[in-house]
Image 1 (tube, rainbow, N blue to C red):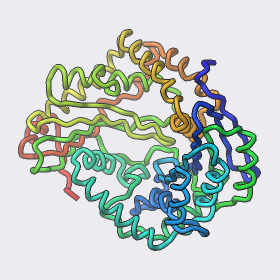
Image 2: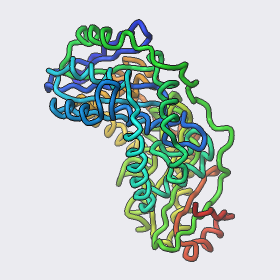
Image 3: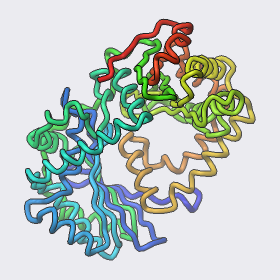
Image 4: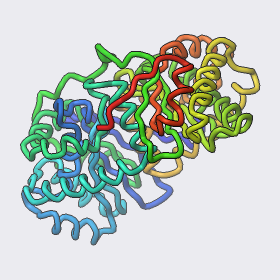
Length: 437
């Protein structure tokens, strides 16, 4: 085993909570994370943002300390506390000097186990989120991605953003946030992770003392693992924005879950298709050869349930239809013709070469371990990562591209001036116009 791969320690507390630790001795730092394995996919219908708001509110006061007292005490130790929820998981993290380990772990236990849910802080969160969402709507790139996810997934759990929606902001109540906490924050579906200059036996001892009596709520919702019953029909959708001179373009379809055995082949396929920057096929064709854009990328969102595969770019409005056509052609070429040996070798070299960089500090290690635990990849995952990458053959990659790229099923969203791009788009196929809301 390469010496840069850390040893991962594991234990289980009596209440069922998982405990993971990595003894990181290169800096006197400590990263602590409580992860509940439910997230924004559990937001009630019509109330996006509940999980993420609840995660933030946990950090804004406990039963024994106000938000101000908590912030002052954490700042006095040079530490930082944060809470957030994404799809599949909710995280509350505390980072600081390893010498304050016991105080840090006690603080994390306090905010997770005895939150105050103060009314005044909830109102402040609402106003802050309102301002953030208004600003977000002024960014065409972010707005196009949000509209694409809403279009593609509809009312299914992945059809909204974790931060919330300006249209439903007032529908969220403090009781909704408390309901998420009481249902989903439970030790049986949670992990406590520590990465830093702390011996694992010490972590176990303190965790048993501070977390052993934690019972939480529950039972947690069933994990969301299935594809939605209904998705957006393939085709071209146009959101008219006459104020824009460029079109924002999103193209994609449903991808596989993280648990799919084709994860590693697809990771390499996507790098070659559009995830590899200037070396990718999409960038070479649409930017370098045609000069239609400054940037284009593709990505699979690997989640517990099947997530989206999305290609994102922008172009002057007059080029919109040409870009949409070329994207489809590049996807077809990769699916039908596969990859070259040189492309595969370069992609493998990139991921193998960059792998140690993610293990250089406690934050990077924590990020990897949280994914390993959330998706149940096994504690030996890091040891076999490079071999998994190197073991992908041209035949395996070609089969994965054939199975998971669907150029005939692409959902295309164009957000731009209809007067300058609709006619050309209609030459590619029927165009459905979307409402601006």
